[in-house]
Length: 476
Ligand SMILES: *Cc1c(COP(=O)(O)O)cnc(C)c1O
Image (cartoon, rainbow, N blue to C red; front, side, top):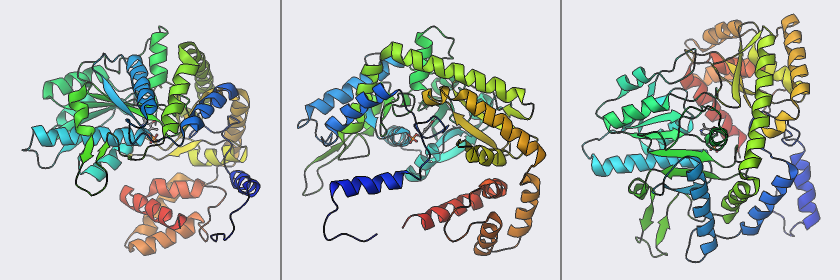
């Protein structure tokens, strides 16, 4: 790509864009079980229209753009109502789940710095099932992650292990409602009690579950308590761009009251530029995403969300039943929402992802840990609900094919990887592994089973390095 002397025509820009898009997985057809959340065309058109309407307005300055202040406050009040927050609950709209989580961790750390200055190395106790965004926050803000165990059957946080992990340096506990990986809600009542007893911050990661769980609860379904109704809960993250079905770039971080949120806000008059007051990480902040979220909440409304989540839950039940009927695949834990993880003792699950990919479906590989097997993740959405039967037909066909032709054997790869890595320098090991995985000159092979099996077999720190090197080569 070279910088053009003459700008491209509008037609050319859009044409080239369309040609770029043609290589992407198709989100709209309901064939992707991750990444994308699409409501029906009418809702999508309304939220996108609202988004575009405010795209160029800048929430950096609420005095110049009071419309965006109103919109952000509306979104926060609506989501706080869903999460059973009282009038004291406050929050902000952020760019996504990761930013909401980064902010919650930073805010807890800064509060601890002010109120518990004797702590020099703050730590948070993190279930192993919590999202990697907490590890990112730990790395960005120098908060030590102490990993607590989960029950290998239910995939719920083991509160005894969590209690044992608390030290005098601990500032924060984390719970998921539900976890992305397995769709399981942590025992949040018990964790709230623990947080109160030890006087610790408790963050609930309801990024994926906040909206649909609240809607299910309000429709009379038995949903384990996870929100501000639980004593001890300090902050909650809830994404609008997931099951809130708003356009991407919108999440909400909520705090029990202003005294907590105060530590989130950054202000500075240290420079010759304008005085800076930033409640979130961004400074210039497009009005588009928050307006898309606002439009989604108000346009879809309670009955709309209820219909969407009920159809999605019905589709999830059908998928779970069909997976169990194969006798070859199983579901990890017992999902509390429409997210699930499929594992198998008999076939290489990464081969299943490839087989499904050849049939046009995207399932997301998740790697094994010392306590849980490699698996494929599905986030079932409204769009997927419409294509459950063809999906299940292809799933059965793929399982049958792999029972006849198993492909890459995880155990053999594990042994090969062990031999390859043993006694080699990191560079040597990576070169050999890349060759084994069929990684050519920068490109990816069509079937990913070998690479995924290698990544799964690698010691974690080596795997993380390899992924970072891969990204470093991928981007120019
Ligand atoms: C998606 C998700 C995140 C991260 O959110 P992004 O919007 O991708 O930054 C964090 N936690 C959970 C439980 C999630 O599902």
